[in-house]
Length: 88
Image (cartoon, rainbow, N blue to C red; front, top):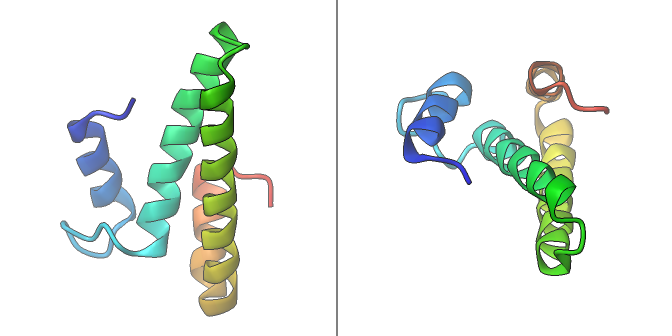
């Protein structure tokens, strides 16, 4: 679970403005943080299939946002992938 403080920190780091929560970069960063949190939960609770389904949805959503960012702004795509250490 991501706390409110962690969310504000991510928005400040990846956003264009202080309250920029809608840009693709911020959304990708927030999804990545949620994916990491859920993955850690699933390591302990391997039979939690509802959470596993939710994780797959989040990964798909992040993939779609990455595809959009790659089409619209290739330099921003490269920097966000490098900063978040994603395998693309």
